[in-house]
Image (cartoon, rainbow, N blue to C red):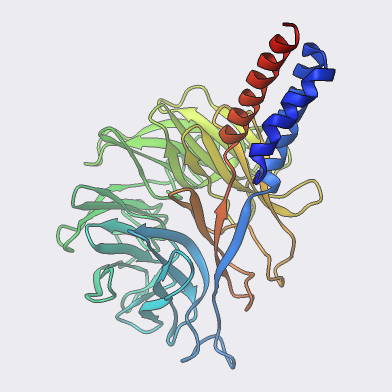
Length: 431
């Protein structure tokens, strides 16, 4: 970002010969502010792979799958993900790809016929050398969704459970959470109360059971995967709570101790949360799809006991429910509803709500190569983020991208070094 850094420090030292210390300090502060503000503009965004449909239809031998809606996860330096459509059988695909976008490989072709699921909409989960996930549809005569497992090399695909739409729920579409060798997940509908379930299953496919059934009304519609903090699981509902607009809850893995922590009211706090909650151990972070100052969703945080709720930023939701934040230390990276010109962007913000900066602004619409924001979670691997977009790319059927964001800390250290040089030079000049 600063290729001539070695020439920058001497130039500052020379400048101090004609600048009073107070003026030099003011100039440094101005320099630092400009540098920090420009760091986002210099973020490096690269489309690594463009998903494609068959040339004659939405599926066929030429299709690698299209419309990825689940983000990616990694094992080593290999990325793994899913497409919700396309593939030879038009049920979507599971794929692997190297972190530079090369060696794209279809691991599994989902079928739209009985016996296999289709429309994999949630991020995959890694346990050992195996990938686990859910499909929203398919899995048998009732086509109510499945749980599946596949080895990272594409072998050993197996269906662990086909949802019946009865007491076990139906249409899971969220990421599974592993506690040891047991996987926990949610269904938004079905169950004994008809309002969704929390379930568990062993990684070998045995021991499936419904842990908790939502009863409806204030206790209704789990909207995301679960987050483990200590010995408890935390989650959200899309239409539960006292106002029917969603809530945050805590529950023990055995299904006991369900506690309503916070009820959304469609005021400044927003409504209808989606996406798995993030945590730093003290706070929970999440996104609402609607409500807030502009009725376009909010990025929020609350303590893990439900107290201290705070809106960190508005304009973070939307009907596509794609805007899921990524937590890195004390910074959140989140897709937003857009810049001042109405576009869509990725921004960063501190976990206390300060330090908002746009990181990348997408320039095109749904029929453009450069279309966003990310649809699903972004993955941080090393110093690079990876994610997927539902549309865009060369074929307008979705893209895999990487994003490198300059670290403000580098600029701060550079600025502090400049202050030291200024001070040293001034003392020398004064004798």
